[in-house]
Length: 473
Image (cartoon, rainbow, N blue to C red; front, side):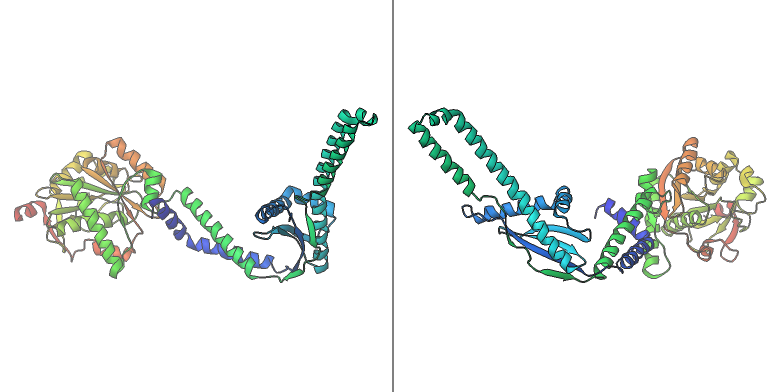
């Protein structure tokens, strides 16, 4: 399956409820429209294009050609008018019999007698049209021959020239041959070949409505998917923003789904590790929209690297979500001193720097040199520092964090992040010369209760001073 086809299928599937609704509306509409349908009758007249002096397959080709000519829309208007058939004849066609010289002229109406008479009138009119053209062409040929004869032999015939009499006999023979030639002429075999009743059906309108509604729904879904500014898939992100998606994190919840989610998070941690070879490496994880996805992705990267035995410090530098997990980033930036580090209850190699307590707008705390000193102390004796940054498009301090960090990972939330969100984040980072690894697309934000296991609580950590952590390692 090509990526393009997969993208189209995904866009339709994402809007499947809308597609189903459109299909149902079209199906119901078709059935309602067909309630007034009546039984129709089709009358038939049988014609033949057979010629004794020609092969049967050639007659079959001629019959097919006459059928196409009869069914031409421009000719049908003419033959309707010339036949004088009533307006309640809903349709009429010519249908050739396969591999034979025969063709049927069929007329359909809501009255059996009207359909029968209309088929006969149409057949007579069509025969008159075709044979009339052939007769006119033959008569023109005879007239041309007679004119040429009179010019050459007329005077000699008046003078009783024997050669003129012979030429006259020859002319008469040629005229008789022309008059006896029945090639390409149509003959009517039956003006009434039977009338067939077609009861009104609800199944055909219903099927047509379902198929038409399904096609219409898919087209609408594809158009909406192409025009929407929200980003749902890796293809959407690449097509509409040009940003490379490193990994898509699926919804967890338990069982196989949670296993898939954990595997994807570990893939992401491996990609981040490869892109940050120096030690200590500082990676800023920056969401493009407010919410919990940025914090969850940042914590998952730090946790997975710690599981691999890499001493990792997770710095919670997003001071806008109101969390207060003891002294941390806010206190360090506001008052010079040692950085408070919390020992995580999970992997032994994972330490956490909490947000701390803030009042008012935290932007004033984020002096670039203080942020650099913060990250420097967090990275003492650490191999990796993962910094949870606030949404860069709505919190200016995120710009400072991403500038100080070595690399920046953007976090997009499927169905919520827009093209404009990503464009603004990229614009701000480019202004500061930020180095963007790429983006991670999270399929949806987990329930807030799920996020609580990533929070640092008093019972889950041990608060130590940075100097004590360094001396203990």
